[in-house]
Image (cartoon, rainbow, N blue to C red; front, side):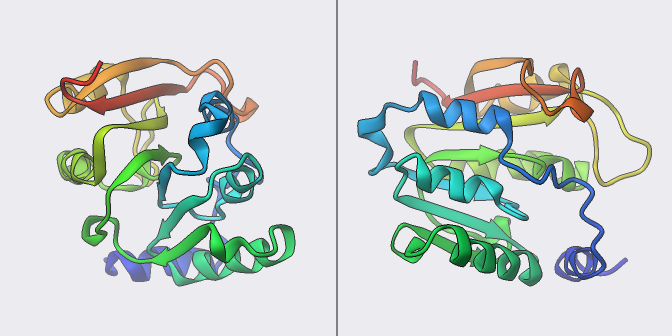
Length: 203
């Protein structure tokens, strides 16, 4: 088994990116739209495992100005950089592209967006994911996004259930929302859960 960087970089180079929905994720766009406009510019946002990062241009267009897009595959970051050069000139002043390992990433964020990153990780890393997310989140900050509410043979992607996610996240976060996703893209309709978490003790 190749190391994590080699595995994902090889998939990118071979065009094996079946997880890409080729547009901004509707649940993430809807969540971003609910953030108060006067809060967006100062809000530090992280999207780990960003891949093609369609959300990057959407967030820039919505007025977010402190965005970090993170992926372990150099080709993913290069592809996203080239796209942003075309669709969002001057993006470098408001958005940072980072090629690196999520588990080694350092920073603190008001908002972390989850989209097909959790499901790409081996299930043995799920507790580490929860702890790392907790360490990256500012007090009062939130994590929001979608998780699969179904199982897959083999993997990645690796599936899961809302019951499993509640057991995983409840020791570390306050669970505001963990419910069926009503606005998934059609191929994933009925198979995703939308979730919003915040630091324990924050209402």
